[in-house]
Length: 190
Image (tube, rainbow, N blue to C red):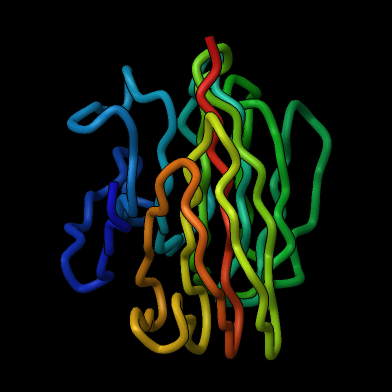
């Protein structure tokens, strides 16, 4: 199976029900699934104002601020300040969660996995990175360029800001990052 390239300029924006922002899905599985039946879903969101988060029963979430001054997430009554960009924060999707922007709009990177069907590990590579990538058995690897650029296989496949590439199980590539990239290992369960 080949690498699937997912360019940022091809993503449709979906407005939130509460009007606080828009979401653009980067990738999800199974193909064609919606918000109620995905095994995993990765998106980028433009957060224009604070407010409550949607609840996702049985879903684990990892959120990372990628632009802006950050936000304070209150998860089941405990405030967590996400004031530093590119620091993943994990929380349960069914938790009562509210957001307060620290100083204006933000863009966040959101990884959601349905418990019992999938699990995710989110690693951030920052700076001038050159290394080999190998996708483990029973997993896929989603590479998302969050700032600057990233490339696979030398310069054969170049990704700009918010572009992504989905590498299949057992895939091996050379990674080059000049900026910041998220490596999301997505494992199938059950």
